[in-house]
Image (cartoon, helix red, strand yellow):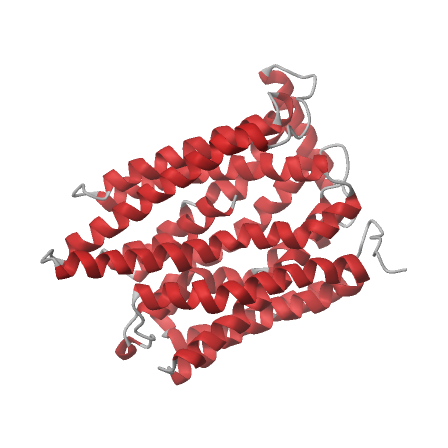
Length: 413
């Protein structure tokens, strides 16, 4: 579930930076192509009436893999930026459809108690993709670049070749996962009785109407948007900030250094944070833990403000900052995921309403990401990260005030 999202949302920024695209263009276009995750609720009712959820999971994994292979070949075209953006936009549609179906399998196959118990594991594996991609794949691109460069290949061509290999590796990985899940994944339930296009359109209208008549829905929409507001601003800029030279206000890291920091410091911190959060919520209940989760999620964004102002060269300081940020991200993100599952999604259209809520969440991230490149160019990295800290304040306020429709059931005795 996580690989297409993370590659399009974060790794592509490093790819295009290596190939000479400007920060503003990178942030704008790599955010804009994420729109399917925002509007995926529009086709979620159709996934409930045709075939099984497993069918859509497997199909979209295979499709995304093939498209990454096509993107790898597109890097060698003169107009590679426009072509790969177009291919990535189709990958985004496939990935968003996969998310709907995969979340549907999770909610259909597990009880409410098991959802809370395993939400940390689900979050860990979803966001492990972030570490595999921004750590392993970016490191691999840097390692391949050095190899191609030492053999006499021009810098631009070396980057093209290294990223071609990375995208082909993604192709093979997703196709292999699709074939594996064809055998191993449970069905997630059979399709509904409706089978026609009219049924689907009627279902969509019903889903939207039912969503906006839920109790406290406007509180919930505000909460979903504001919880990740700060993250939306920093998501695109962090890898660009890490790669930018020190004269431009960045840290001047290589791809291999970025991959090493994410893949070692970040990996352990994130996995520990995700797993601890799942058991913490299961033990105490979401209502009692949500504000703490919000604080741990948003406060670490201040790490990048400190890194921008002091520009440390020490591996331990930069790595320590990434540990703080990734632990907070892993620990806090599962709170929002579980809130949408247990407070927003429940009802007749559980899968579609969860997709609707996820789409609203991603709209916030997409719009802030589109603006982030222009804002960071205008403000400089130092001022930009300070402004992001101010943008997190509404998240604390709404989290303290947000009401609960359904009582959660902690596992303490």
